[in-house]
Structure formats: C-alpha cells, structure tokens
Image (cartoon, rainbow, N blue to C red; front, side, top):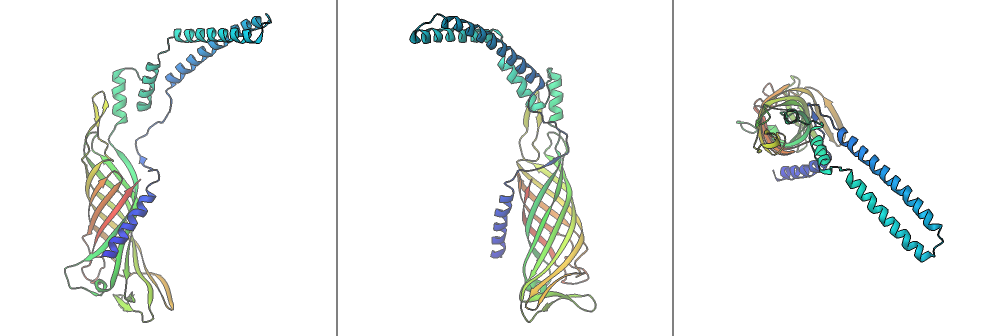
Length: 345
C-alpha cells in the first residue's frame, strides 16, 4: 500500500508539471477578441494628427526665427542663449495649443475599458446591460482532462489467485468533460462527455494470466522468471451527473450577477457506463516476450459511480464499479475501486 501512495505522489508531481502549460478550453459560446475600440482608435488617431499638425506649424515658425537669428552673426555664447529662449517659447506655445484641443483622456479610457469588457462601443445603459447578459451567459464548454488512479479489487468472498498475486493496479484516463451550467447564477450544472480509460493489472510472483481449453482464465506460473506481467484493458466511457459550485456570485455591473462555474470549490457526482475496446496480455521475462490481444474474460461493459471534489483545475475522485471486472465466474466478484487525481485544461 505504501508503494501505491508513493507512486500516486510522483504522478501528482508529473501532472502538475504538465499542467503548468496554458489551459485550452473549447468554449461553445462564440466570443470576439478585438484589442482596441474602433471609436477610441478613431479619436486617438484624430488627436494625434492634430498634435502633429501643431508641432509642424510651430517647428516651421521656430526654424524661420532661428534662421533670422543666425543671420545676425552673434557670438556662440549669445547665439546659444537666444536659441534656448526661442525653443522654450515655442515649446510652451505647443503645450498651450495642445491643451486648447480639449482632449478628454478620462472619457477615452472609460470607452476603452468598456470595450475591453464587452467588445462593443455601446452607449446606452440598456445596450450595456444586454451586452453584459450576453457576455456572462451560463457556462457551456468542453474541457480536456487527464487523470490517474490507484485501483483496488474489492469483493465479499475469500481471496482468489488474482487477489493473492496482484502486485499493483492502476487506471489512466483522458478525455473531454462537458459542463453545462443550468443558469447564469445557478451553482448547479450537468456533467457529461467522453473518456478513454486504460486499466492495468500488474501480476507478481512470476505469475501470468492464461486460459484453459474452455477459455476459463487463471493465473499460471512461469518457472524461468518474469520481469513484466500485465493485463491491460481499454474502455470508452460516458459519464452523466451533476456538479455543485460553492463560489459566491460576482457582479458584472448593471445589476447583472453571474457565477464563475468552472472555478472555485466544487463537488460532483455522476454515474458512468463504458464499452471495452481491447485487452492486452503483456508478458516479458527469460525466454519470453509476448503481447497478446485476446479475450481474457474481462467484462465487455463497465458501469459505476464517481464522486469528485475539485478546486479550480485540480480534482480528487473516488469511483466504484457496480459490476465485476471479469465475467463468467472468473476471479469471482472482483470489483474495481479507484482513488485518483485529475487535472483540467
């Protein structure tokens, strides 16, 4: 058991490192992304042109005055003094003329802030509220995720050969989770999506999974020694359930409130069902190296329930199969119980 938790801790570090990258989310709500308001850009361009015109006019007048000053053949010290006075006077004139333009920087900044929030140069409060309602709609997106869990086989019968010789079992998953918030301010939402799961049983003590003439599955001993003995089964799974978000409501303005449904502390519960893709029996050791894809009486369908606790992009979960891992009485009544971690992008 200690080895299992050490491996879980190591996986957490690896997943955290991977998750340091940018999180891509497929948002099903279309959204424009324009950096500068057209009105702001037009006003700033117009203001810049007027300033440039003022500077050019004053610069031409200053150069003409300096030309006349130079023609007086003053000594260098006197010329530099008079030149500095002329430059200072024209700089002051430029400042006065620019100030006289009456450019309202605060108003322009407010327009840009509003545009950055809403991607629109709306002016009326009614339009503003409608834009806010459109922008802060209920969450509806597809989020990629990856997870790993420690898998235990539980049953209410005496230990069988698999229970005795099972060294470790794990469940690796990745997929897309569909989040559908029931309302802009609702803490409740629907969970669904698609998952790809690989469940791996690692057998120890030089044992490997084998079949008899009647296709019954049992553990056989390899007398030369094995370095690897795994039974890996892949499933396609569909979850369906509910999530509750404990975050406080946020205010966007104009009496528009919303909940950031995908962030904060959340709990969720769902049922799931899946269909088997394939099973591989991987055996390596002295004198043997096989990877056999065959029917090893692993259940073709799985179904169960999962409970998840999440904070922002990190989740802890426990899931339990309601059906046996193997069918037809093989390794009777073994059911998967999985504790794991997940990261979202």
